[in-house]
Image (cartoon, rainbow, N blue to C red; front, side, top):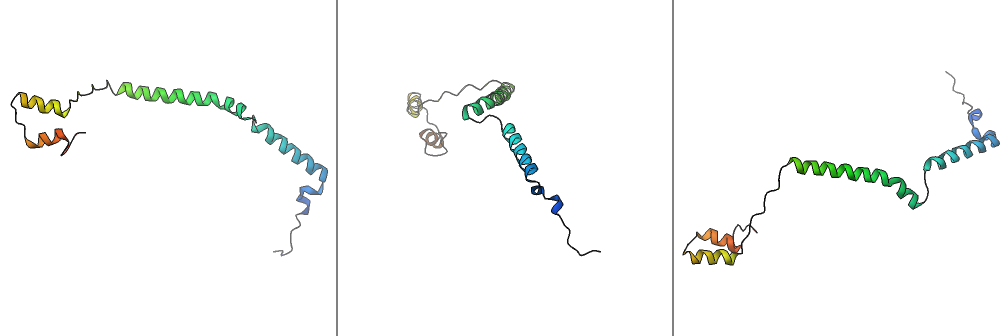
Length: 111
């Protein structure tokens, strides 16, 4: 076992300044080339096709799910409480108190 320090100076890339500068320039040039378009309109143009494809796929999935779930049930006709009370009065009908309160929204109202 040797406790002496290891000399890493041969691995130092800055020992050859010209080679070091070429290496940095090469890395910088590759990074700038891989970065892609720089301006905002160019970036929006580059992302437009994937964004439209994603929107179309999402639309098809939602449309397919809605189509598979069947037809939409018809909305129930809602009558005004005054019309319901007038119909009961015209027919001399006496509904239970809970139904009257539900129509008027006093208890367990469906509104």
